Length: 183
Image 1 (spheres, rainbow, N blue to C red):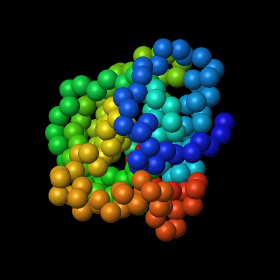
Image 2 (cartoon, rainbow, N blue to C red):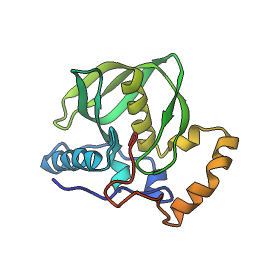
Image 3 (cartoon, one colour):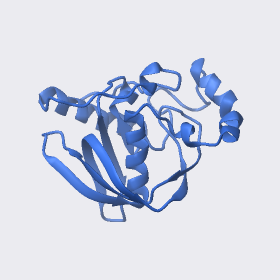
């Protein structure tokens, strides 16, 4: 297992639609382990493979559901359906450090996909788990949370975003701790 570098806003891989995973082998499981380790090192609760430069439809989630239960899983080739409700909530992104804003997301949905062994997953997600999954699936489609903001909000963030493109990181964000938030 190793910590991989997070790709930052402006990197073209963040705008690509990721390819489906077709091989469920030791290399895939090693990538999943690296994603978990990287996500923890950068203080995230989710991370998608494109965020470490791998354009595959793979994400990991690790977040508390309540005081005693965690949702921790890899989700490969995810499909989201039966979305319902809508709620705004603040989001950040490991690939856009120092930028946070309110994004509307479905509050409930059905999630289907595969785990890192190729076994089917099929469950309902709600609340913060639903938000995190939607955020990470957006990464697989080349969509960033800032794309879901109004043009006025994006204009307000333009200076920070252009700075990230130039390699300017927010103060206090060392290489391995660039922020916390969703992946």
